[in-house]
Image 1 (cartoon, rainbow, N blue to C red):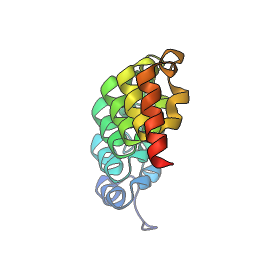
Image 2: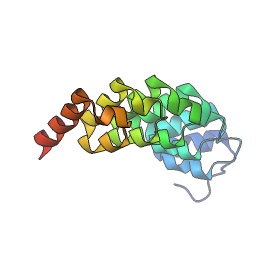
Image 3: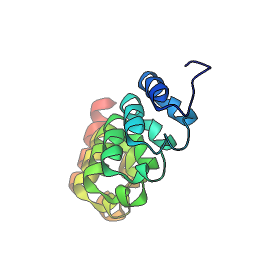
Length: 149
């Protein structure tokens, strides 16, 4: 990153975030609320969602791009999007541990939990009690652990 980047200049910030998504941290507040800038940053690194404005962390399109590249970015999504089955499914498919950031309702959704345990059986601990006792879910979690170990 250039030391003399003007963090309030959209074109310069776009160049910076295309090279290093985390450069979004230094962007002027108005640019952390600019969909074009944030989209380029999260394309480079989904975790850069943590530097986006609150409004854009509540933007379904932005959050979906972020979690597809970095499932853990679900942590920074607006609460209502942590209850969006499509978004949470994409997040846990990419990184099973993202299940811990999902809404209580989706931690009780068999499809979502199965996607997560297929990534890592250890995430079963984040599932609802009902699903921790579900044969299919437990077998899915056990299967992945047996293959890995």
